[in-house]
Length: 405
Ligand SMILES: [Zn+2]
Image (cartoon, rainbow, N blue to C red; front, side, top):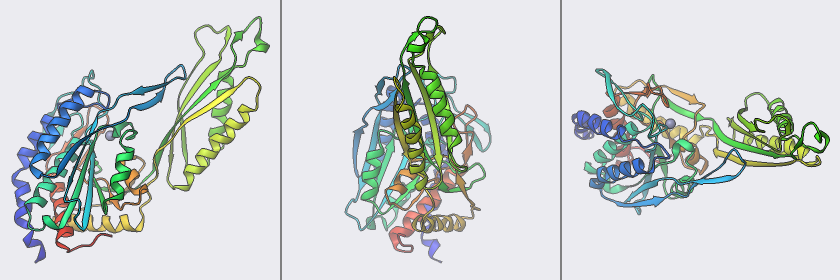
């Protein structure tokens, strides 16, 4: 009975299906790789125009540069794009944070730039599901909410960031501050290829270890040299051997030395990606690196630096997020969807929001797959479908039919 009051507004979303696909294709064909500042600006302008009819106060937030270590062990700063932040009714008693990124992993000079209908329901293209399809879903859901009679009872904040694909290193502070002033978080990352929604997520971090030794001629002065590669190799082996099952420490790249093998190398760099399931395991990773570096530091002529940390803390499904997820699933079922919940080894901004104490559901985008490669696709029928699910959730929250967990 109650659903019937929402039906006309939800049907309106269905009527906009073709328009949504057109919008998605246009956006996907604007290259917005994380480091393509010109393309990001073009997308930013598109987004500002598309969201303007919703009202609210929009602002552009310049993100601080991303820092990384180059192959000489020097810190370099790389400029990032801007985040679009929109707040509407910030004084409402109930406030919802809606987040998704508009950067992609596809560089401006890559071959994958166009969209193409593969069959009646499948659109292939860069970022069609990760995550520009999610932006289209978010926008349609907010349009439905704003057209509803309950809109006045709920406030919302939208964050569209441009650095998620590198761990939201520039927008982390923005996300944390927004988590503190809202009551629940909705993130529009893609659903799984079978339609499943993500429950818990692992946490992810990146560590760079820089070992410096002492150069010397390998023939004349080998004893005076301090081999940075050998020291680093010992560290990698030690860290790998002492990592307990369940924690992933992947050494993904090593650099060091040069083509002249008759020189004792004085620099070696290793880069690690680490994944954990439980928050306490982050400390374990940290202490494990510390123990391995402490041993090397005791040696004459060897220095060790460890840079980095967890960009995304793990997101176990806590009681409040589980309750919010139940509400989402109930909305989906009312719309005739079959939804499963799965765990993911991948991370997203939902990890950061959850770590800041916000109940969050983070795969409210459309259904698709093959993320981060040139077969990326979205099932276009799921764009209005998922938009209706979020719209129903927002309207029920605003109407007081369901409560904030
Ligand atoms: Zn991605």
